[in-house]
Length: 370
Image (tube, rainbow, N blue to C red; front, top):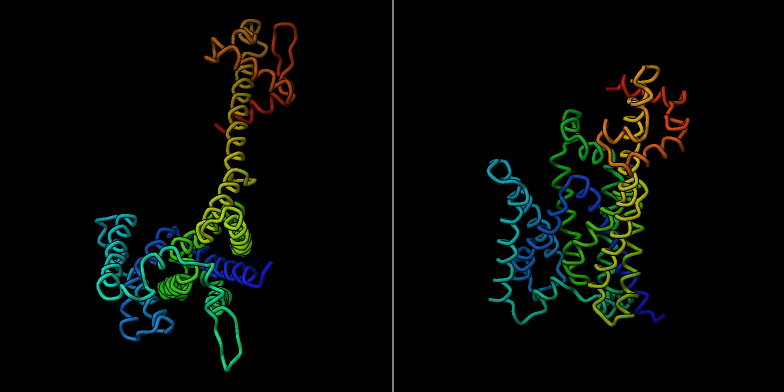
């Protein structure tokens, strides 16, 4: 492995970690689409700051991007407060307008510089190691790695310092306000960090991958745990695994690194969506399947108990009669009886079904619950 390959993977991992931290709170606050809006809508801020500084490496570009991100959130929430439109419609109105404004400004006034829309959307991670930061004649490393490391530290410090306040304002903003935690201020600081993270990652990975890394790993982690601290940790791990896996996928396919990392994020999320122990598709299917047969077993137990010891027991408590009384199909009725026998709820005596003590207890419990 060459030093450039190591640096590319390191940049990808740092970008993934920097995006995952604010992304966790976007997912929990159900503001995933806001990351897409911010990552696109900050473009005019970057362009206007470039017109002032004429330097793509100026810190003013990051500050302007952060300000434009906050403006985006403010405009979306202002539209929401009118109660005339929902959040998706408000985002759909605001970010295309701002993004288009940035595209027009680039096309009209900045078409001859390295601030084109392809660079903003797609980035080029393969070139990142060649743009070096040199201080006092010393090669510090790739500029994007230095920038994203600083943003990662800033994001991590913000979450560590305001962890309690962020947690409370995320799950109960009203209580956070009552306790004097200023949830609105935290909200806008978080949105500013999202904007700064997005613009910091633009040159290396592009806005498409920023959105994928900001939402994909936290969304996958959300399916794996209910604890905030664990969700942040899992998001970091999933983001790092996706970044490295995506890089080697691009190496094998000779394809775009950023595109392959985004695909890797999708693959990891898909795997978690299917296999997550509690919230995955398989787990949900098994839970619904089990609930279906548990309910049927309760119905059978109640039916047998209602006729137990009565003259009609010999007729009502036969397997063949269940399809008539409970409107069950023959094969379904037979499976319910087999499951109930397996669970020790009923026993067969000739053509008659008899409740066990466990079956009577289940029937009584079901009747009380209803």
